[in-house]
Image (cartoon, rainbow, N blue to C red; front, side, top):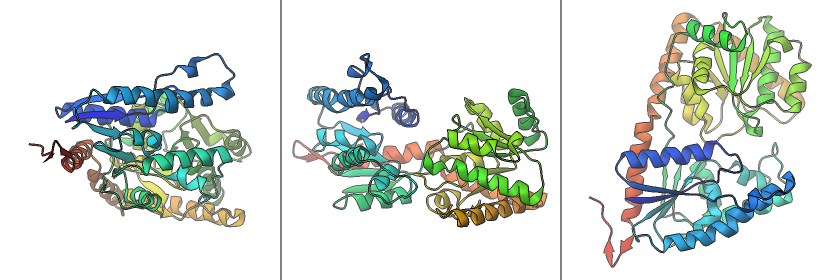
Length: 398
């Protein structure tokens, strides 16, 4: 196959989607396919203007200059070229190739749902609503879609005006570096790296400051657990620098000395963080897939997550579940207390019972290998390309 992958521009600073696009490209190249990656280059974005204007200049690069370049470039490509959109948020570019073989990868529709007022925890301003409508108008021109979860696929079908010609769920693959190890060794490595005594274990959360990651909820559960059970196991919050609200919550906690925000943590130390933790806390409000759940299980870590899709879809029956954090403040305190009970139940498990949970998790994540994901994507690409006709003939791959 000849494949062109549309990617997010690098200049706004996005990390996860460019990484995903690179993985797609390398996976297809390893299987012998010819792959080219297209993304907008910064031009107006580089102009010396106030930071508040940078985003708008970036939009000119993405939605005015780049489409002009694409229209010129596609003229020289064979009709059998498959155009792959690494993310449905690239929807505004879909009409450029809507009449040619294409497929759109869908990760989550949280921004879309927020713009329509469906998620009260994440209010969207009027410009954001217009932007999401612009994205939606674009991807609705598409015919073929691949979603990372059944939950994401369901959201996609709600947003489309008609049934797509092709729609499949292909789960993400977990990096093979995420494997079990010795908890004591990992705790020693992390203690030396961060200057914290973690020899007796710790609780851990891994994630950014996005509203749906619910870092506030993690702190609430930790506070409730410490108050109820009088144990002094520290909490590691691995990810971005905390927001002002999170910093204030930690500062005013009676257990502030045991709450550690760790930033700039490399992948290998993240692996150690999973391996050495007694519990991985992941009470997300929403996800597209829920990658950290699979990563934690791959490292032999006990997981506590939210009892809603797609968290349950990824975790299967191998995680302890907690209901979604409610908006009501009184009920949210009860929710934190429930979370504290779940933590203590995990900590009180016998060695045999804990081993059973971990083994179930390791069996569960066999569904999420990079090799399987890449094989399924290659097969899906071939199926999609095979539905198009070229020069009066149905295109068939051999």
